[in-house]
Amino acid sequence: MKPIYLDYGATSPVRSEVLEVMIPYFQNEYGNPGSIHDAGQRAYDAIQYARVQVAQALGAESAREILFTSSGTESNNLAIIGAARLQRSKGNHIITSKIEHPSVLETCQYLEQEGFQVTYLDVDSFGSVHIDNLKNAITDQTILVTIMAANNEVGTIQSIAEMGQLLKETPILFHTDAIQYIGKVPFTVDQLGVDLLSIGGHKIYGPKGVGALYIRKGTKIEPIMFGGGQERRLRPSTLNTPLIVGFGVACQLAVQEAKSESQRLTSLRNDCWQRIQDEIGNVELNGHPVLRLPNNLNLSFDRVEGQAILLELNRSQIYVSSGSACSAGKHRASHVLKAMGKSDDIAHQSLRITFGKETTENDIHLFIESSKQALHYLRSLMI
Image (tube, rainbow, N blue to C red; front, top):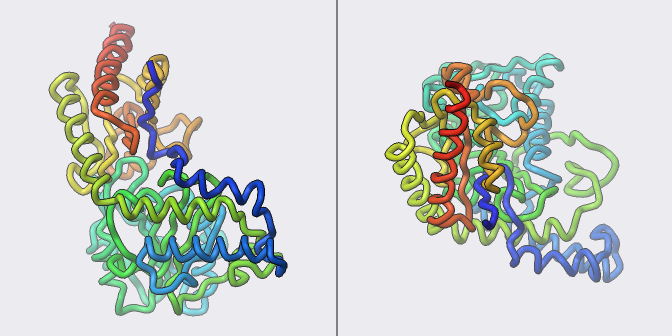
């Protein structure tokens, strides 16, 4: 049987269109984009074109608002640390939520060591941040709010546009981690009302090792790396031309196809969830039932640990996740599910199934049949 990949929330394969544009910059057009000779300038021009592609994908006013990084994680670090340090003369209070990606949570915890005060907002049982909780947390010392657009584990989509509207008339900077969001839900940065927005390449069929930070015109941040003048001195390092070129195409295609692919994935997801309820049962859906990423199902199966199901499915070459990939190897209850009020048992029983471009109805059928067998076997061991 051909392997069935249902872990697109962790990473995605590089599209053929993306790989095709990257290859020349590995082999033939290998000039340093910082060099002034023709080989360097060809690389520089390719990067600038990719910058335009990313800007257009996000609905940015100018390509100069796009800063290339090595990953979504780096983009989150640069946005949060860079904004907080530069704004420190105006206040020292940051607001985030308890269900953020570790690249946000651990960055905020790091800033607490520098003397910043951080409020970690509670979420409801669906993993949603309530706008009133954000409003009540704001003080005259608040300088930055960072709330993810969609959760990487349970798929819950936050009301970022409503938050952006709330913060619009304040001097508070607003950052969102949109790494899971882009390509799944159509949006522009103006619709969201954000000042800073992070994205990465490998969740949208682009290469690993590349990301971008949108910085709205007029928004100031400090660098957190030093040693060169690249990217307006905010992110020194020789730019990775082939990865950036591929990232530009990946962003362009992801946004062009977001509406149609979202509809297709939503239909697959809903059919899968209905069949699981009908044919397996004793299962709980984690996350918002409607306001969730179209490709995400996070489920807790009664009396069986998610990792055990994962390993049984792996025997059948069906690949899923028992939590976010960034937490792999750490056998502890998901901080996201715990923040949502789930018990340790429910959290340990969770399984994340994420669909993508190659997912078919037959894949869903085989996943469900294999899950039935896996659950029957695992529960039989408990008798």
